[in-house]
Length: 124
Image (cartoon, rainbow, N blue to C red):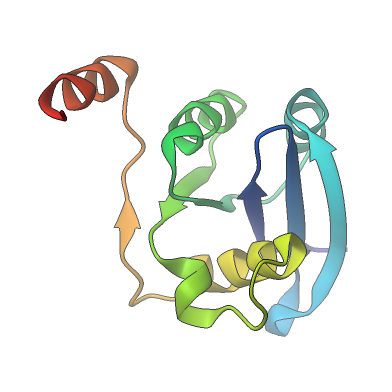
């Protein structure tokens, strides 16, 4: 089973992950807690992981990058762009995985803690 991209929809306590293979075929759908997700992704061979752009995505993106040479990307406005159903976590994760493979999507770089702290000081 060759995974080409992974999409992760972030929640407060649970994360929904969808793995896509060749021709965007869904290979795996699973719900994880944060520790379970990091343990699972540590053994994955894929190099393309997409996250929903939110405040918790930066922490998870840094944790995924520490696990090895892979590209963890925050994708902005992905579920709105190609979401098939509203408020469905697994479907949002699938949309994120599809969007990460697209060349024309906008992506948010993963920020360091000091960058997030400075950003928080500039906001009222």
